[in-house]
Length: 331
Image (tube, rainbow, N blue to C red):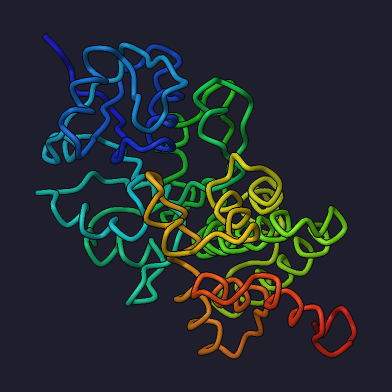
């Protein structure tokens, strides 16, 4: 007689599939929800996800389902749907586990809600946590060492419940209670990664990219503190750590989008041609609006938004470089 596994993953994109593979690495059963019925069948029969993570041979203890009611039975649910669809997917569940761990990085367009606010609105009876940090899906799926922030809105009690379900020898979570900081780090770095990709696509060199990472981090700190995030959180894995990773490699979807834009690609065509989501493109407009509303200067974010709206990347970067000279602490 089969037993219900303790943990599941909602969303079978590259990141969701990689998390399921990591969770199953010690032989535990893991339930994985996918919207696409063909994908459910492939995962269960062939133990592969050729659509989103073709490099991985999946553990046989991963069982895919398209039934949201099955996911509601679990003790802990990692929510890895695209940020802009998270609330709608959660809204389709008949009930909710005690612990929801949000793994999508972004800010909801149209409402300006962080993911934890959207989840609380849909599932007010669940304790919300956020998992964020420097994580490429293919490395996590391959069992390479990874460290993340696990920010628990339910405090230490929630951490003690869920950390044993998530921690593995090659996957190390660090405790935080700063859910806002963990979310802001992940959302802002996606936009900054697009900017770094643009720098690479324009051939502006390593000096320019390093400067952009440093100045982008300053924008992240200003915005985060305005929304109540803790500075130490943003200096950790889910802020600076994630920023450095995604601003340095074409394995980052956001960086690769920026690189294509810097090389002269059309934003509309590039977004339409992408099977996987570059969340920074959706986050940039709402992030710029929120920053303006809080009186926070984020010139790099504003520049990314202009490029996404069709302004030539070379001209936008030239304007950014011609801003008035000032002290670094004031820029």
